[in-house]
Amino acid sequence: MNTREYAEMDALFDRLFPICRSITGPGLRETLSILGEYLPLDLFGVPSGTQVFDWTIPLEWRIREAWLAGPDGRKIVDFADHNLHVVNYSAPIDRKLPLEELKPHLHSIPHLPGAIPYVTSYYKERWGFCLPHAVLEKLEPGEYHAYIDSEFVSGELNYAHAVLPGKSEREILISTYVCHPSLANNELSGPLVAAFLYRRLAAWPSREFTYRFVFVPETIGSIAYLSRFGDTLRERVYAGLVLTCLGGPHPLSYKMSRRGDAPIDKTVAKLFRSGEISGEIRPFTPAYGSDERQYCSPGFNLPVGQLARSVYGTYEGYHNSLDDKSFMTIEALVRSLDETEKILRALELDGYYRNRYPYGEIKLDKHGLYPDMNAPSTAGLSGNDLRDNRLRLNRILHVLNYSDGTYSLADIADKCGCGLLELEEIVAILKDKGVLEGPFREQGGSPAP
Image 1 (cartoon, rainbow, N blue to C red):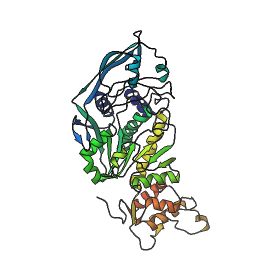
Image 2: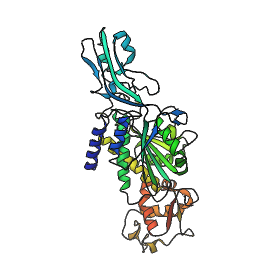
Image 3: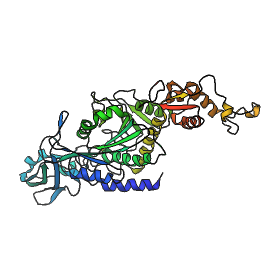
Image 4: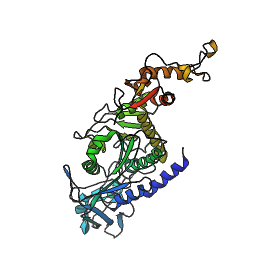
């Protein structure tokens, strides 16, 4: 493990976790500004009231202070202690009221008596407080003071992106969301992995694809992004991943794109099937998930899947204060970063190749790919100096024979009985020798634009 990268990711988490984020407002902008120190983000703003498809950008929410005091004047909950204590997008209030009138505005989780729930009301004006159920049960009759210093202003919704150029204009979309306050796995895991993934890809010697990294408030942010950049994405996106819930203890989990047979679907399935990455496949569903539902909406139907680890809704800390660094570990984030980078390496490698000398086998020894003497002593050699029971030689012969533009490299790997990335060295050798060309992104071996 890269200890410097680990320490930097840990420090970035600690800076971002306390910020009160929402789908609009100062916390969202502060988060994007901090992330902009790690990758060159372009910031965009969509004014309140703007129509984006069937949605309207709401007024911007700003909050400064909030607390609930009991009959004795002592504060029961305080926004300064934990920003989940206030219903996100709460309207302002400064009012004294009896417990029976207050209770409809109090939210807790009975089966998790120590947890503070995450509650939102973006599109209908409400006010409220969130508190542990154990605290709620101890509230006694009397007069309570509810105070929320917030406001709604005509502002904007913000999102950001960074585009990392490659050899081709064909793009890999990496999207994540930045709107949940003080939630670790179900918020910060995605932006943290995305930010450090950009840095890793920027350090690659070369990239076949261009990479587009998108940071949006969930749902309405991706809808606003598609409203502006949807045509560009439709034209350029070859594959995409939505990053969410990547910091828990479980193996990687991939949700298929709506298409089900997109390159990203096939590549991840091959990596899982071969054991190069330990993971499970989930089918696409529009019923739940993250922003892949917007990218995969029928009007766009982009080839975008979703990566998670401890999937939303499957762990007790989902959408409550138990989702902190004790559950989401930096070690798990680094594993997710490693595995996501491996997926992208495989996407770069996979495709359709062409043997430039398809009429009969090439003279392998002429290219240093076969022993130049046939004898019992050379029986296990792949070349004059590599004794590996002919493993490399067998893979070379498979790659050359099936590289006719109709078999993908993943298909050839299946025929070899090996992992996709295990052919990376073979492809590099054959391309260096000038006997193999590719990868092409379309079956038939024609270069993609």
